[in-house]
Amino acid sequence: MIADVLSEASTRMNKAVEVAKDDFATVRTGRANPQLFQKIMVSYYGTPTPLSQLASLNNPEARTLVVTPYDKSALRDIEQAIRDTPNLGANPSNDGNIIRVTLPELTEERRKEFVKIVRSKAEDARVSVRNIRRKAKDDLDALKGEVGDDEVSRAEKELEQVTKSHVDQIDDALKRKEAELLEV
Image (cartoon, rainbow, N blue to C red; front, side, top):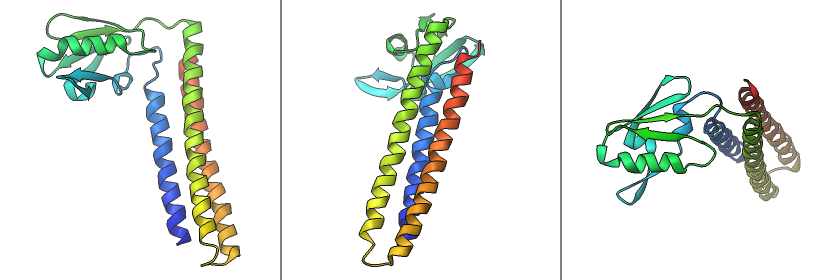
């Protein structure tokens, strides 16, 4: 029972760390990266659809990304979705077949804004991990009648170690992303 609670908490915390890393990847640095466009939703025949399902993305140059739609009729919708995406600052242009997205150079002020955004995403991830810990602790407290108090307290200590390791993983990813953002 205790092992089940701990393994479920650890699995959910791993997912929270992965979500945080994916969120960090969507914040742009000085380079164009197809992951920046990973969470862009395009209105395709009235249905919000991820851009990656509607087009192929590749970057021939450091600050340029080429979007090649699978369906040419979605060209305008894709272009509009890219233009409307906040915190990207991209100005897409299309030639009827492909969309070229040139990302502007980041200013020092803009870099600091992005660092703040990444820090808030990291804090959200930490809160998520702590919520998972709280739920697991409640589950362990519910087991106190079935198993000994010593086993429950040992499991709680193990839960704290697991939580700390996941928070540390989030912090490490945050440090790497901050360094990447502030690199000129």
